[in-house]
Picture (cartoon, rainbow, N blue to C red):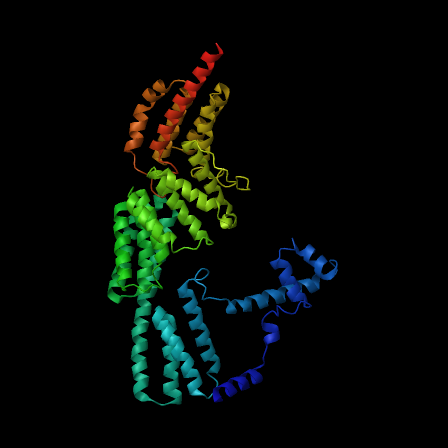
Length: 502
């Protein structure tokens, strides 16, 4: 009870301030609360609309400006009361860091109170959290607060020097973590700028990554390993070292499962996502399906990450020719009501996946997306290519001579403009194969003969690295087989139609 009395006294003497701190959601007569609910329920389009609904006109624009400022300030304060324990919304590490910060801030406020016990309990709670999550900065801050108590309040000489030694140990660790972070940022900027820059600075990148690895081995810090894991996986993927990438990912998972890496600093779900993608690119479909199914059970279908993962799952199915599984995945995705909450670009990709399934399997799927294609038509070296391929193959099936001729010319210009020798070689080869099909759409044997050399080159050409295209929706080899079969089938139907009319 004594602690409670002291806290009440502090609040009363310091000023409650609650009226100005947060919104009162129950007070519907307040203009602040009314504005909040207008925005929440999407009942205002702009400031003029808000002025009309709150004040009946725009005569009080100055008052509205002040109202909006107060609401924003209170909403910022409200951030401190979010439910950080929700794992679907916030990473566990963030929740612990915010909790630790809050406790240390409380201890800082209580620093002016003569009650040592009250402050020490809070510092001990913060220190426990900080050590559990390996938050080195917070550990040092908590230890330093404890040292102040033993130095200025309790006059415990032995405890003072014991805490000083511990602080120095963590200060050394912090310097190493800061060095690792500097190296991490330097590597990431060089890798992200572009392929040419990445190659020019490859030695710098390799040396810095090796130094981060050395820092981790010297310290055992999960914080440093978290940086090392991200940068190592990023550069292995960027340089196209798929086999080495898979080995590194599986080795990392072993360290994590053995408890050598803190779960707060190892992105396990993202790890499974990366591993699924790596297995896909390396055509290890059995391992890919096992990993994909493991991750699927851990993700909520409400989360956008679930949809991102299902993209990899779908590609595993198409690349392994498991079209029954591909159809099942499409059914799961398009029946998920949260698909519409995904960014439009992601929704447009699912549109392409569905259309290519229908194209290659000759099976119409009646799933609708109420959107106009906006992003894939602009992504000239990415998904726009697939949209162009889809349209071109559909036109080939029409056997409309004039329409095919127009699309051949359009595709020829597209290749010349967007796919030079430095571009993704597999896509460039496949687009050239389509040009042959556009010229020889009426004779499958001639098309096969003229395309044989390019198709052999395509078979011998590995997938491009991440610098160019995404993983192919349907492997180009499989898609070319479909084009030839489609040409043969369409021309045969046309011939039968002509003969029957004669």
